[in-house]
Image: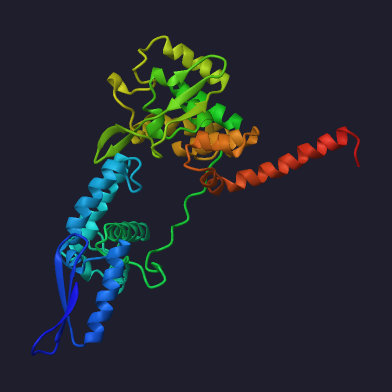
Length: 381
C-alpha cells in the first residue's frame, strides 16, 4: 500500500493498495494530498470491514442482483430465518418481471439514483400502457428499495440509492385505507352457519378460530387435538401461485395452537370418525382442495343472501371477515392480547393491537364496568 508519483499527465499521483478480497487496486489523483486522503480512508474501511469496491457495483446489473436476491428470499427469507411463502415469492417475481426488469434490468448498480427512481415510480405504467394504480406503484417502489437494500448488505453499494440523504422515499405512495372489518355477533355467525347447510362447521370453525382460508383448507385429521382442552395445530396453508395451489408454511411461517370451543370440537370429533388422520377435514368434489372463489360463489354468497332475506341489517362479510369475527368474539369473551395474537397468528402482540386497537378500546370500558360492579357489590363509595 503506497502512493507513487508518476511522470507526465494531469493525474500524477497514484494510490496503490490491496483490497479485502486480495486483489490489487490503483487509482490516480491530481495532487498528493488527494491520494493520501483517499488511501487513508480506504485503509480504514478495509480494516473496519466496511470497504466497498466500486468496480463490483459497476459490473453488477440489477438483473444479476435480483437473481441472487430472489433465490435467497425463496430459500431463507429476507431475515435468513425462514423461507418466504410461495405466494410472496410469486408476487415479487411478477412485479419484477412486469415493472422493474423493463426499466432497470440491464442497468449497473452504480447507475441507480434517487431522482431517476422517483421519476420512474411517479410515471409508472401498467402492462396496458395506462398509468399504474397507487397500490401497484407502492408495491413496485418497495420491492425496488428492498432489492437495493440487499446490494448494500452485499457490500456492493455504500448506501441505498433509492433513498434520499435522510433515508426517505417520498415518491412511494402511502398505503391506501383498507376496507373496514366486518365483525359478526355470535347470533349472526350462528345464523350464517345454519344457512350454509353442509358447510356449517366450516364457517363456524373460521368464525370462532380465526384461521385464514389457506390454513383452514389445509387442516387434516391429525391437526385436531381433542380431550379436556381441544385445539387445532396450525402449521401449513395452501397458497395459489400462478393458478396452482401449493401447500407450504403459514403466512407468518410459524406453527401455532388455536383453542377450540367445546361445541365445535364435538362436531369435529364426528367428522374425524370417518376420515384418515392425514386426510383433509374439508375438501371439494372428488377430494379436491377447496378454492376460495368457487366455494364463495356456490355456497358462501348464497348463505349470506339467505340470512339477509330474514334480516335486512345483516352485513356482507367476506370470508376473511370471519377471521376478524373470531378475534372480536375472543376479545369480547375477555381474552388477553397474547391469546388473541395466537388465534390471529400475528408475529407480535403489537401487530395484534395495531390491527384491532378499536376492539381493545371497547374492552377497556367493559373492564372498567366490571370493576365498578365489583366495587358496588363490596359496598365501596
